[in-house]
Image (cartoon, rainbow, N blue to C red):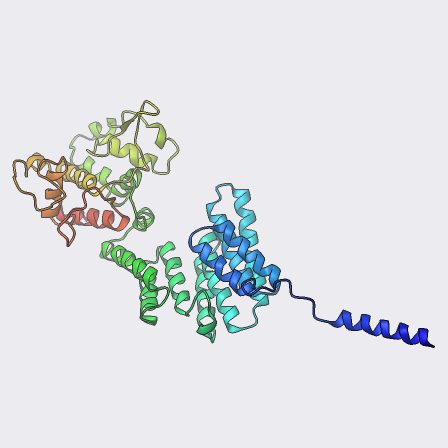
Length: 401
């Protein structure tokens, strides 16, 4: 009888042990899923994707049902996909991003979880750009804004305006510049000193500049892609002049003999534009011998290359547009109009500078502008909005429609 009682007790203990809550995997104060998720999101800001993934993995290890960590993993995989050149590897990362995003959605229990997952969906759509990606981002934005969020518990995003900020970035990438401008403005108006104010302010200024540059003109796909660039390359500028300004047609119209135009062509095709998407535009620019956009001798290859990716400085831009102006107006005197001056209106452009005459030709005609500080920023790269605005103003000055 005693033996039976002992067996019953052992069975009861075993049953209780089976029903007990499993021991927590992560027990130290900072070894918790929310902490690892926050560190992972911060690592993503610095594009430390592997570090971020490690933090998200640790968060999932601590709590497998932690929705936010899966949403964070989805963004990390999408960032990896964006940097992959190999289609196969890119596809794998895209699939993982979508799987983790869906897992985060299914595990979301609170409005905060759902908000974080939907903001992740905006970001993932923007990064991987699949079919109807912008529509997907817009749907996620609406869902995010519909959540009744407790902002005190939004450790990383801190406020619902984060959704507006990332939707603004998505619109910017989708070339919906006015919508992007509105979303960045919404972010700034949500609170005075929010986490997203500074990046939203920078993005708003950039987008506002693009909107102003495009005011009153229809810019095609090439122009839109160039508009968002922080620095315009030589190949970009060639494409902008040919595709947006229709420079080939304008130059050809200045030559009365059609057969002479038909015989004109670039002397050679530089090796670095052979497979470049703007090859045709570069060869047209070379055909017309636009000053400042000639091929350059490359010491490494011992060959003349166009240097398509080299950024165009503002002084160079003035020089190039001056030549276009001279060719279109036939006024050769423009090339020496400001020679012999002793004083420059710009402290960073001396009268002895090779760009001085061009800078004065552009600024006195309102085609390009200096800074409020008085400088022209002659050596700074031209950004996309500045390039489009300058081309637009040049068109107006010579009455091209």
